[in-house]
Amino acid sequence: MIKSLSITIVSLVLLLTSCGQQHEAEALVEDFMDKNMKDEVSINARRFTDIDSTFLLTNDVIQKMRNKAANGGQRYKKSIKYADGNPTRKLFITRVKYYVDTLECSDTYYLNADLTHIVAFKEN
Image (cartoon, rainbow, N blue to C red; front, side, top):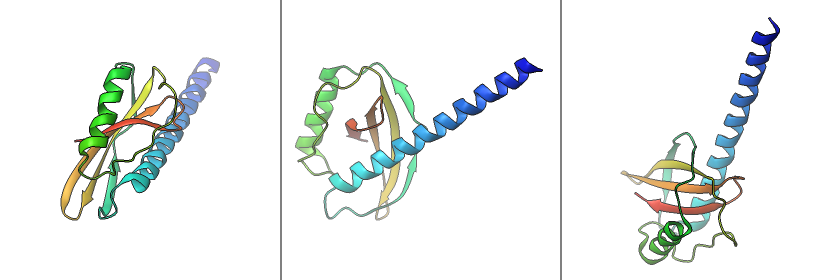
């Protein structure tokens, strides 16, 4: 009985933590989009995938994504500011789908392990 109750409590705590992280990630991405999209871009109907984690991105790959966004982004401003310092080894990843007028778009975002800033993103 105690073992069953313990498993239920641990599962509930993990579920609530996961939901909180999802909400934090979505709020961070929405804020980033609002601040960094070009003025003429009007988006609506954002849908997020569940966050996941990755350890596979190197600093070189992150820098390439940042450079690509700064040099040729379709919907984003070129003057995007990222947090100072090297990103954490573990990153969270999520994809957001949204509409610009009637065109469906999606972007992939990479967030630091503390869910406090966007490390990089790519327009898909």
